[in-house]
Image 1 (tube, rainbow, N blue to C red):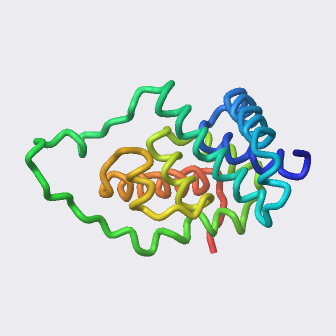
Image 2: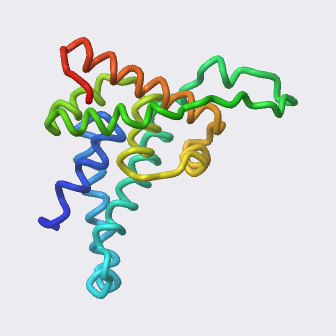
Length: 169
């Protein structure tokens, strides 16, 4: 538990944006680990299992206890299949540059300033290495909304750091 407690807590805190909720989720993760202790002792990747459980429990918590976020992009007729495509190329470097230039606390603080609909997909994509389609499936939103929210989250992060006079490479 001690070897993975920081990773589990950080995963939950990034997704929920609330340390108290992250602590509760971390406890739930380690209770599940205790229930599966026999399997985990022989597993070559207990950290991956714990991170997956932390991510799943965090997403379950968010969907259960928070209102679902909706943007105008979701408010289109049900018979409409066309989803606008968004070009998000070239914006991936924002989060990587932020990580290269700032300490972890500053990144966590900046992520906490983002609204849930931007922070959650951004964290899942950049910190959990989840592909767009899986994020859309897990959050039960459209693929174009995921791309839009990640793009908006990156732009908001760039504004936060530019406003604080941080230089991007």
